[in-house]
Image: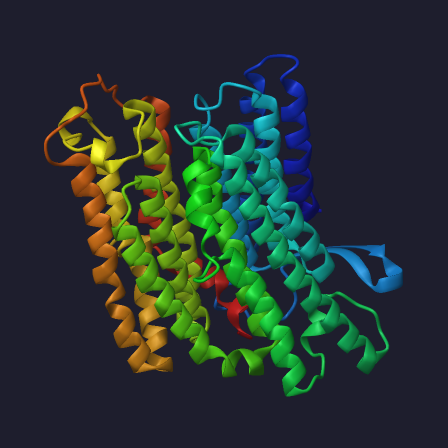
Amino acid sequence: MFLLLLIIIPFFGAVLCWQSERVNVQLPRLVALITMGITLIFTFHIWVNSFFLVSRKTSFSKSWIFEFLVPWIPRFGIDFHLGIDGLSILMVFLTSFLGIISVLCSWNEIKERQGLFYFHLIWLLGSVLGIFLAVDLFLFFFFWEIMSVPMYFLVTLWGYRGKYSHDRVKVANKFFLYSQFSGLIMLIGIISLVFSHYYVSNIWTFDYHLLLNTPMNAELEFFLMLCFFLAFLVKMPIVPFHNWLPDLHAYSPTAGSVDLSGILLKTAAYGLLRFSISLFPRASFSFSTFAIYLGIFTIFYSAWMAFSQNDIKRLVAYGSISNMGFILISIYAHNRIAHEGAVVQMLAHGVSTAALFVLIGQLYERVHTRDMNKMGGLWLKMKWIPAFSLFFSIANIGMPGTGNFVGEFLILMGLFNFSPFFSSISIFIFIFSSIYSLKMIQRTYYGISTNTLKINNMTYREFFIIFCLMSVLILLGLFPQIVLDTVYLSLYNF
């Protein structure tokens, strides 16, 4: 029943946000905060009370920790089937936590149509929760398609309103087209897999566990794997399907960027781990070398593009793509240590990149520009924002004591077991990441100040947001065993 509540609460809360504006124009933000707070409490309750089931001391079981199953369309074997295991718990926790952060960072930024804004924001988070909990592939696809709609409206209605603000509609349309392309390829793969299972078993089903053992020849398995791989590749995104992400970040409100980098991109990495690798193990293993080369190319290309940016938000966006390339490498290392590192890195990257986008939003509210050529010398004019920006920039390149360091270390260890050659190349990633990250700090906060505006200090709300993000990142770096124990059994078959 808890799993159903994790789905119902956000969608019900979203509708309540929309209607509560009729009572008070500022009430929707409070309703949104309470909604995501309750969701986080439920998630934490499930995590704590089921931890003994997913610890290393527990004997392995293929079953989910908790399940909810109701027949939906029995004629075609479609069920409303939700399940949660260690991997799902961590992703749901990340979604709920960053959901609260996205509400708080929108507290004063969104001043018009607040009810409709929080409706789309919470609806987006609810659909992402559905993706992480769906066991039935039809249900997974259902939430996957829903996810794109609220993001589209967040950009078109509340996106960037600067000099070229009219372009936000074009950017949103590009994102939606990419999303539809991704969904179409996934739908082809899902339907083909279901038909393949029907031909050998005479049973219609979209159930994940039943489809796991579907007999198929090598050619069919490779085709189906490629469908899932391409669908998730677009959403991660990996070069050459990355073009939509920097533009979307540039025109998104702060909350949109937080959810986009911290959560939406992780749905694709989750899909690769949960479905592509496990449903098509032989084809995935044979495809590993190409996928790793693609990930390496993505890392270096995105790092170079990040270095050449003047818009600070686009710089962080390209850095996010580079990190997702690193996660792609770890997934296709086909190694338990690398997969554990991928999960830690997904959490750490979600928190650290979200923090950078929050800080950029706070910076924009004060200097009214994102062009680093018009910044400089801001360190002496601000009390906390420069120091926090430096912390999260260094954390993004793997500072010891943060979750990023643990994730990168585990990935390199696992990758070395798979291929010392690929592991050696990947070490150079940190050099390139350091270049664009430190360039951002130098151009923004050091040098001669050209800004004559009076800059206010951080408010208590802004400080609280960054403090929470920093605390989670440090806790993840100092106590990673909690995460590793939680996800251990979920990665047993990968």
